[in-house]
Image 1: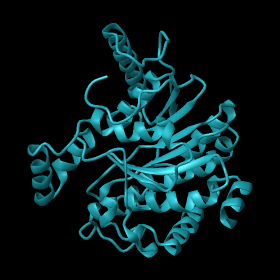
Image 2: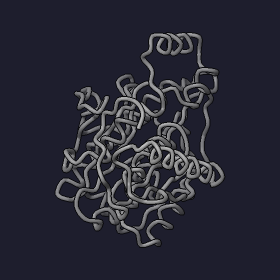
Image 3: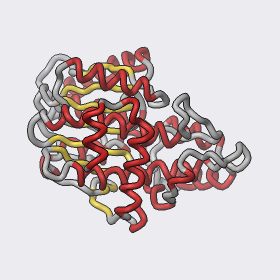
Length: 328
């Protein structure tokens, strides 16, 4: 399937349902495509139906090309099982509508891959009153996971939540009073700082959610895809400071960055590798476990972030789920 793989090619039943947020482009597209080619049913959760429809057409075209080449490990189907569901992570109302629609479908859910993410250079506050990177990269995925946990708990063995983090979490700093950038002006707002924080929150959520889910069939892991040449990187590079533009250029010139296909390998491995059944509290880099920095492992901070997050989404969660997560 192109390139050296760092994930096993396995056969997945069509009944195994995988949600990929932001699955219509970049790393998410490549991840969703490979998982669907192994046989699973994949839901592209993203904003644009037009882009998702085009992505599904492209996936099926590439699937047929792989079949003509005689690629091994492909699902024995004429078409991939890939569907679109609308999700806009800048709106908690949209997130709630997405999770309500999914629950109403009666489907099981075996894997939730929280892949969608953005970067920006301007301070932006969402309609929900949240700093944009905090909400899109972290809080909306927190709400999706919290809302769908009851479904996953009833979906059989080996259900997984995979959170896309980044090596930049290492530079992130947790301070609950600065999460929403209330004191930042357009001149003082540092997007790199808030991006790093959002990726740190994903690791902190992993630890707390695993404590909540410790005796269940649902596990949570984090992945770092690498420095990947995607549209998001290009857009960020155009707007970034001279330092970051230079750093990214050097990384690309030295061959240290990855294509979107290569960047998907670690996510795919976390989703499909049968050897990872029951594995939790692991941060994967190049599909290998990597030690997590101590500032991400502070239990008190994880608990503070968890309660803060519940407070921010409380109007979008059923009362029984909210109370259950508040007390665990």
